[in-house]
Image 1 (cartoon, helix red, strand yellow):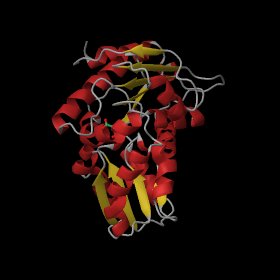
Image 2: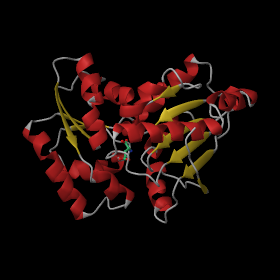
Image 3: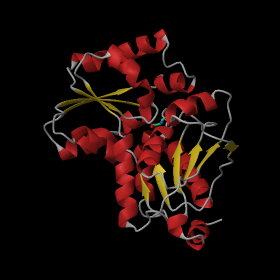
Image 4: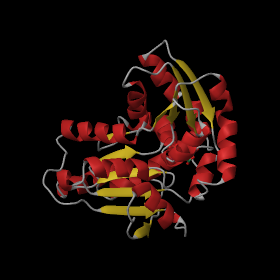
Length: 282
Ligand code: DGL
């Protein structure tokens, strides 16, 4: 099926009434979904977690682009009216390639993250933790430096964190130990702001507060991302009006036993019935 056919499905079903599409390599993007459901409760949401191929963060840019293309294709096939790339790694490596070609509005999580970090003008020394792919892309470093050349910016790749979160080992001593080790170089630089540049990391906030010195601000972009999405939908006249609670449909490429538990922590509600997704090249 070609992308135009997918778009027709969205148009025929009345674009405003169509669902919003989100994807991530796993459950992390649900942090963004939670924020969107709080801000835009009437919108239907379709979420794809590519759990069979997680993590994206250690894959090559070419592979990440291929996976992203397939994830976007899956969501377009569901007739979504807009897409949120709820994965920093995919945003960093693949999103620019979709600005032109995607038939529905598409946005990522990096711009909202940068906006959140710089919002109050307090940040001077910014630390970034993210997957290898995101740090290696320099997308955050570039976006921050473009807005403020006086910032001191330090990125650290923290590849062990996503597997620990997906395993639900969040409160384990080993996770705190790993965090201390990862954060050491950032502490040595005296950062005042730490950007959680991976949609999985908001779940680590309580543990991060334990291991970080007081006063370091934590930036999680989920809320800013929801606000960006609202502005984008308004600008495109795609915002759904009217009362009523939207539906949440979750698809995963691999179903695991711990998903329900983990999804509940991300969503602060039951994920409902989770369906198996098959994604393939479009
Ligand atoms: N949640 C993803 C992100 O924001 C990455 C997890 C992964 O490595 O797949 O980058």
